[in-house]
Length: 402
Ligand SMILES: Cc1cc2nc3c(=O)[nH]c(=O)nc-3n(C[C@H](O)[C@H](O)[C@H](O)COP(=O)(O)OP(=O)(O)OC[C@H]3O[C@@H](n4cnc5c(N)ncnc54)[C@H](O)[C@@H]3O)c2cc1C
Image (tube, rainbow, N blue to C red; front, side, top):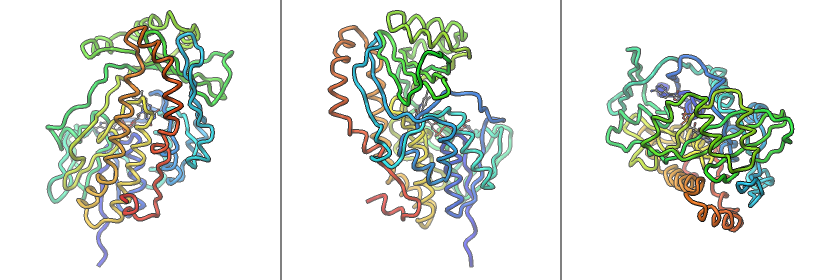
């Protein structure tokens, strides 16, 4: 007798959600996605950089070209002091040879769209306007309850609902909440015709805040800023109207290269805010019938540029575990065993990067500007373990654990 097809409830349609749904379908599971947002918001959010390890997962899904066509190469970082003078460089122009794929800088909303549409093309059902309020993965079935009063049942549930995961809160009510790292992110898109396009991200250690920008071949400046806002002032800052946020931002860069203020002033849309959190350690990511992946399980601060790539890696590994292991619990346990050390190491790295972004005094800034080139030279290959990771869908999952 044929075993009935397992049904998976996938909560969240950001990055991990559609990716895991696509791989689960390949593994013979029937996934159904439930997303809180009632409609796609393809105009919001900032941009992100997918490094070769994440791009390999897109390749395995057959959507690398689609994502690349909407994104831009980004394979060199030039670090600058507050005057805009280069102090160090991280050159990854040979990443295709070294890691077998090139990084992609892309607007977040476009990446979401490609993943979501790939899932829909594959016949995967997506229910919108479904905000999960409670998940139960401990009985003979996995269950989800939504804010609109509806429920859903399946053989297992995958929590892909991001940093402030409701799935995590209901499965593990005693788990630590994400930690705020006293660092704010903002950014946007601007046009300054005199800036030349290059696949290079320029990152400036300003006197009071950090700033990064890259100019795309179409002449758009993708930029971000990181600056200190401590926890006590976080809510007040988030409540500031956009023009006040902009004024505050400009005031942080008055002593730095004028280019930063020009870019901020040339930005016409309201400035969004993304406080920097991470979620360093959960004792376990799964119960009998429910498992967390992506930011819901292990959020890294944006500074390492790895959260999305890690979410994609999780998606392929979890589906392989489902394919290759007998039983849901065994698959979840194998997934956790394969993934935990790697993501925890990435979180630590991101945390260190976040700490260096805002110098607390001029002496610290002076030392940093001189030591950075040395550290970068010494550590140039320290990203190999991150970027060089590749999961082959066809290989049995046991090979990953070795
Ligand atoms: C400013 C910033 C810059 C970043 N830059 C990079 C970068 O350059 N490179 C990189 O790799 N990573 C970057 N990251 C990290 C990256 O964005 C995340 O790691 C990634 O989005 C995680 O994917 P996810 O699918 O786990 O979660 P998300 O992308 O957050 O998706 C979660 C989904 O779940 C939905 N949801 C939430 N709650 C519920 C609920 N209760 N019920 C149903 N649905 C729900 C949400 O609406 C959303 O669609 C950055 C993050 C930030 C904030």
